[in-house]
Length: 232
Image (tube, rainbow, N blue to C red; front, side, top):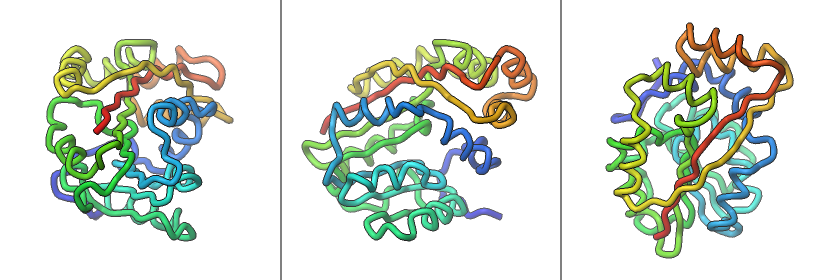
C-alpha cells in the first residue's frame, strides 16, 4: 500500500495513473505561458522555491535551473519517492512527503511558493493557506494555477464529472482570502492520439471521457486555467 501523509486529499488522476499523468504534464503548456506569467509577477532566479503537490517532480528540474533551492512537497509517499529519484543529481532540490497544511519547513524560509492543479477546491484550503503565510518570507509570493471550470469544453467536461463543484463558491473563497487572479489560455498538445485519449480517461468520468474523445479532433485541447497569486 502507498504511504499517504495524514490529511491528504486524494488526487485520483496522478495517484491512480502516474504514467499517464506524466504524458499530461508533457502535453500541458508547451509554450511555457504559465511559468512566464508567474516570473513576470515574482521572478525566482536565485530564490528558494516551494512546489506544493509536486507529484513525481515533473516541474522541479525546470525550477532548479534558476532557483537557488527548490523544495517539493507531495503527500503520496510513492510519488514523492519518484520525485526524489528524478532529482537525484540536483543537490539543491529537496523533496518531502507531507501535506500543504503541515509543511515541514521553518517560518519565513521560502521566497516563491506554487501549487499547480492542487488547490481548485477553494473552501477547505484554509489550513494550507495559513501554512503559506507562515513559510513565505516578506517580499515573497505564492501562486496557484488551476482549471477554469467556467470556460471551454474542458471546463464543461470537468463540471459534468464533478457536479458538486461550484465555480462561483470557489471565486468567492479566493476573493475573501485576498488573492488576485488572471486567466491563462493554455493548451495541451500531444504527440499521439492514444496519449490524448488516455489523459482524458484519467481526468473525467468514463461517459464524459468518451464524449470528450468524440468531440476532440487532432492532437490539441484548449485548457482554460486561472493563475491566482498573493504577495507577502
